[in-house]
Image 1 (spheres, rainbow, N blue to C red):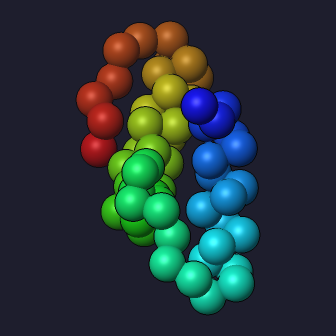
Image 2: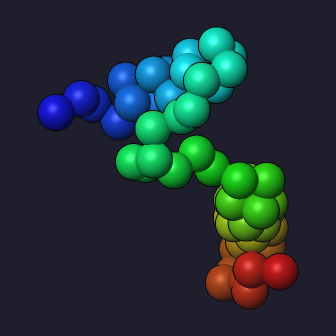
Length: 56
C-alpha cells in the first residue's frame, strides 16, 4: 500500500498526463478547498480572540 502523499502525486501526475485519475481516493474538489479554508480561518480567529469560534 502506498503512503497518502505518494497516492496524491500519482493522481496529480495522471491528471497532468490527461489520463483518468484513480478513483481511490477521489481528488479534492474546489468545495473541499473552500471548506478546509473555512476551518483554517476559524483556527486563526479562535487563536487571535482566545476563544472557541464557529466555522463560517
